[in-house]
Every structure is written in structure tokens, then in C-alpha cells.
Image (cartoon, rainbow, N blue to C red; front, side, top):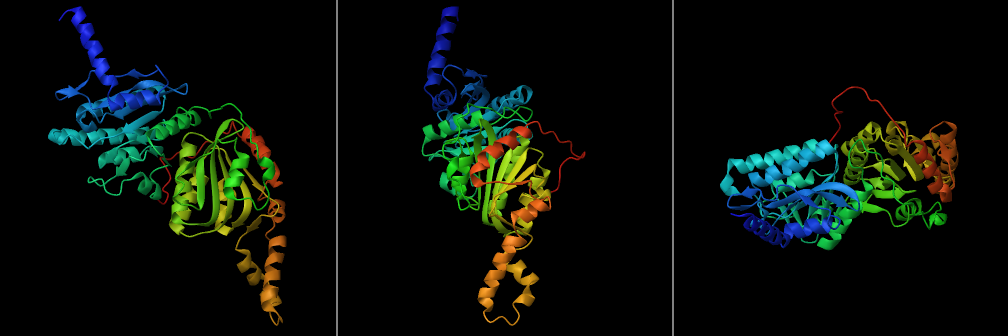
Length: 452
């Protein structure tokens, strides 16, 4: 074939590719004109490979991505597709850039038999080896079932559209975005494909490129409502007041509701936010534990707001405690309400290895619930009381003011400072600046053996 014929063939192939779903999604994800495809002419069987892969910039941030192309054999996994994705993983490791995987596939190429199984295994191994080295985001825009779901679920953040399916069941049951959110698998459930892609574009600006990069610093927007904070402020109001305006992105909103987690900006710098509220059940502990491990992997500082009375599960309480104490990233705790016993120890005290612990003036810091501690310590004062119910209430209030006061905790060195609620944002900013250069050397070991 002559040179003119080759050029015509090239143009024809590229024009056809542009009209496929995989290419359209990739182009919507990356900045206009920035995407460069890798192995665009690689073949799978008689046709082109069932995935698009390459690199470019997203909101100016360099990143790699692959997109299963459902217009080519339903995006079925093949050894050729696996080779393409593995190349992306290898490049991500050597260059230290994040990877976004767009999933939409009917499954695997069964006719490839053992080769298809090996392909899945190699990608799963590659994704797990990448974990904690460069951030991975899974964008689920169609079926993602069986082993593909395991690969996608190993990412740091999972975003799903309303048409996404994520399930280990090969028949696709129990895989809707709503069900994935309820199970804590999906971090962000978007209304449609465009919203899901927009969420990923926002997220990529908030996370470091790799585990050795610094914390991203964006334009400082400030907070417009920090003055409204007071002792009875609810969790969402506290987060909104402390974080830069409209910057908080909540993860897994409908899973583990006693823990609120998400990424935000504080004074322009990316910060992980955890708010623990009420009774911490198993799901809430697991949610907070995984989030703090994610932040620690990429050295994102974590600010924890505590207003929690107790744990409901020993195993998950141990898991959360281990994750807090093991994390070497910057950690700030603000006790906004109750911090009783093991909750204080695990999330705010020395057991959490927090760099700085604040308390609001009306917070309650106690080794036991005041209702229990007051009666246990002063039971003799109830003996023979003419009105034991009223006297018990008075004892509990006295215990809160005297023995469980944050001033008592501060006097014993368990709280670094007691602050006015309206000063919370500025004080957090001051400490974040102070601990921004934190470096910690750990004992040599492969990893700790936590409850999982």
C-alpha cells in the first residue's frame, strides 16, 4: 500500500475510534486536546482491543486512564486488553501519576479460557501492587461484575453513575449504585454519566499524584460561615464552617452514618475530614478506618471532630484504633461534644497519636459515661436521699462540670487547648501549617496485624 493509502487508513481508523463510547468518555474526562492514546492499534482477535488507554491532563493535573470500550465486543476482558491496562499500571509506577479506570464490560472473553483467567489475575495483582503508591479511582459507568468488580473495588475511590453496576455476582444482581452505596463500596453515587465524570475531575485536583508528593494546594477560597459555630452545632454545620466554602466532598454518605468522611480544602490545602457522632457502629468504624488509611497513604492531614459516646463493636473499634495510632500523617482532633472512655482514647487521646487535640468549652471528656461514673463514684451521696431521681441528675451534672470538664483534661495534659467554637477554623489552620512538615520513622516491619 502506498503512503497516500496508509494516511487514509490512519484517518479512517481514528475517525471510527472517535465515535466509540470509550473514546468519548476518555475525551470528556481529560482536558480538551490533552489525551494521548497508548497502543491504539493493538489487536484483540480479529478486531481492535476492547479498551482505550493513555495519558493526559485533568484540570491541569497529569494522569493515566483506561476505558473499557463497550462498543467493541461489549468491552469484554481479553489478554490484549489486560496487556494494555498493565502497561498503564507500569507507567504509573515509574512516573508517579494517578490512574483512573472506566469500567463498562459484559465480562470476559470466555473463548480465551485460561488466558482470560490469567489476564484478570495479572490486572488484579497490578492494581493491588499500585495501592498506596499512586491514587486509583474507579469510574463505574456500566456493568462491572465478577473479577472486574474485585479490580475496581481495590481502588482508593469509587464513583458510579446511575447506570453503573458493581457486584461479584456474575448475573449482575445486587450491583446498583444505590446498593453499592449502602454496602460502603461506592464513595460517590452520581446522577448520570456527566456528573460522575465531573466528580472525578474534581477529585483528581484534591489528591496527590503519588505517595511521595506534597499535599495539593489550591486557590484559597475562605469560609463564609465560621462565625455561626456554637456548642450545639451539628456535624455538617461544623464541617461547612471549618472547610473552605463549598469544598467538602463527602464519601459513602449512606453507609456508616455515625461517621462522616470526605475530602475538603482548608485554607487552600487538601485535608481529610472525619466526624464521629453518637454511637459508633461497625460500619461507621470501618468507614472511618479505611478513610484514615487512605489519607495516611498519601500523607493527607486528617482533622477529626469527636462527639461520640461509645463503640458498638469491639472488632471494628480495634480496627479504628489501630488505623489512628498507626497513621503517621498529620492528625488534629477537635472534641466538640462527648468523648467517653475508649472513644476518647482511640480517636483523640494518646492512643490515637494525635499531633494536637482541641476541645470546645462545653465538651465532656470522661473515662466512663457521666451517667455511670457519677453514680459509681458518689453512690454514698444517693443513700437515704428523699428524691434520688433528682439527686442523681444533679450528681451527673456535677460530674460533668468537675471531673469530666475539658479544663480538667487540659490540666492533666490530655487536651492541648480549649477554644471558642467560632475560632475552630483559624486554630485548625494554624496547627495544619505547623505540622505540614511532619516526618515520622517507624519501627522496621512489614505491616501491623490489625482486625479486618
